[in-house]
Amino acid sequence: MDEIQVLDKRFKRYISHQQIQEAVARMAAEIDRELYGKQPLFLGILNGVFVFASDLFKMVQSPSRISFVKMASYLGTETTGTVHQLIGLQESLNGEHVVILEDIIDSGLTVSKLLDHLTKQNTASVRIATLFFKPDAFKGDYSIDHIGIEIPDKFVVGYGLDYNGYGRNLRDLYVISDE
Ligand code: IMP
Ligand code: MG
Image (cartoon, rainbow, N blue to C red; front, top):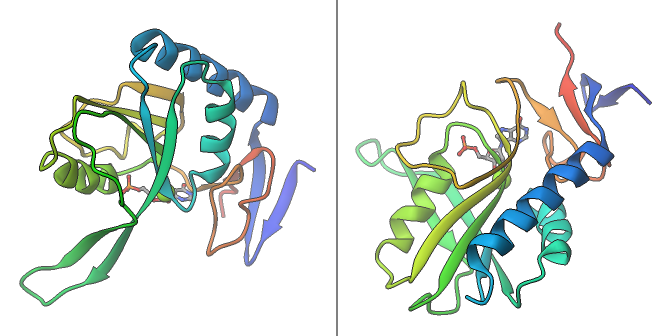
């Protein structure tokens, strides 16, 4: 289906599952080239990343491990603004070659908050890999090591990405229809 409805919004098919798989395979090969033999520790940021992380992890050849974290954001007091809390990091990252996995980097804030936590740990290296990237929305001051597909600053769903919880199970990526 080329046009779908998720809750109250219409979406158009935008990037096929096949194109996504090709991008993921290229990223896995890049990561293997950079980190082969260094036993990378993938750190996926939930929830949206689980589909991408699962496909990428199966394509990586280097012996590696994977773990997941969640960045919970809630409104703090007026002076502190939004507070971002890191949930789920059990293991020490001491000496680890960490590869942060994101489904999509938009403003870049989520990854920047995770990086704040990681700089307090004694990691051997930290790389960032995102399947989708919105360059026109990005406000981060860090560089992204592995990018799957650049997209315009429009809302997308599918392949793990959601609209109010729905749409994650779509195999392709869909972009919101212009009203
Ligand atoms: P950032 O912190 O602005 O980079 O946004 C990161 C998070 O916002 C992503 O991990 C997604 O969960 C969510 N997000 C950003 N853009 C989209 C989108 O177009 N569709 C669905 N979720 C999105
Ligand atoms: Mg996300």
